[in-house]
Length: 639
Figure 1 (cartoon, rainbow, N blue to C red):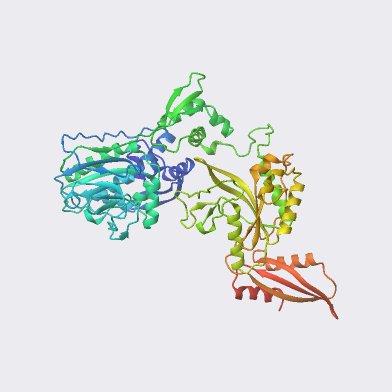
Figure 2: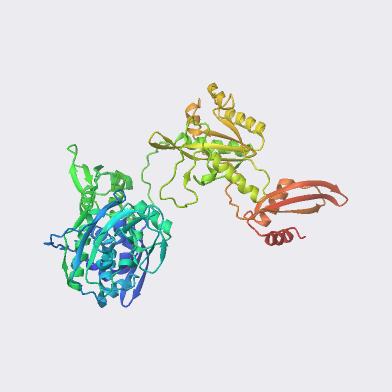
């Protein structure tokens, strides 16, 4: 996001800070300044808004934070108007669940024209092309407040606007930039009951505003951000409006931005208001009430932060502070509707500390001499011990996503459910992996299939990770251990050894799931045998809790490496005058080649010859082409 410094000052009239210091201060309070550039005598900041701060995708939100940080007043806003027209717009909202708020009004008698130089300059500096005055003003207000809006030329659209979810009735739309999009079922669309006029994140050519537009309907809306993000991904379209509507925007800010836009259009293009204001607002936000101790920010930061500073900071942020009747320092805080990210006591602590300044926290002093108790959960130590023991038993660890494909779904058969319901993710980062795994088995089988594609010899694998399941209407998760082997007997013996070293008293009631000794089930799937253990249940059944110590185990060198190419295996015959220590010999050549290229190195044969002893080393190279592997191999072994 770009911020033009001179325009920012109009919101904070008392702001007089060097641009470089401003950039550093913005980074300090969480808005990362990526750079400063000079364009036409203007200083422009590039910001990366990493938090879920939809309010900071506009000048208004950034200005509010800076006003708090510098303790300066914001410019007053007087954007109000009164409509005396009795005409009610015939707008219908059928997408009730997907629409949070819509405000709309009709304007007539407009004289649209090319934009004035000042408006063109602002848009150009912010990376947006000028179209005409009406369109440019909608973009200006979007950049100013972070809330997009649409305009409809009523000669093309009529007044009959309908917000609805597509049910396959409408097949396509031509967007303002001329792109033809094939609509999907369940896309959020705006129609006039005959044709699609707009999507949530981009307008259509069917009712585009031009220089001949005399009459229009102006609307500003906020939708369910999951709906917008899903539409954007399905239709493969990214817009400035969509990027903002995917955030949690403030429905209470719409009237201010909407009134500002109306006044700008009437001032620049003339005309008059030709309808009452349409305001669809079914569910007003319920603001949280957070119990807060004003001393907590200092306690968490390990430095003294005055209680008065904490109180003043929250007040300046727009929070309401109420006494809870117990202590002066204990209050109930109601955040402003603009700050959708403030929901917990920890959020308020972070706000106070960031405005106090992270740079004021010393880095060369201990916070406290008091020895803290070990708060690491028993499950962490159990996981570490299990990893060590399984590596010593010859298993390789894998680490995988908890997201899986539909074809990789294997429900955890140790869960006694008549029906295992698949858990789909909303707003997932990869549409090919829509499910949360309900068993580690899914990940192990997928990994084994990948290894087979790369012609890796049989490997025994394990993974410790989270699995997810649904109990009634609640979604739950726990850690699970999955083990894969090609030998059922070995897997059974390894499980016995594992439980023996954990000093377990195995429950007897688990015989119905395959083994009389353990709360696990060994399942044959796709020519391998798999066992899975619910570690939450295991921890509860352990007679003695895991010893609380960190284990410095040497994991398999392959366990954290990802294959992207086929394994290339090559042999080298080497002759030595005397017998060599095999471990030292392999370590020598591993170091010479570089461990980042070797999947496995082993001695497959040793036999005496006249000159001494002949060794056959087999090296498996990974993520290299055949030519690259052979070149390295020949050079290493002087072949």
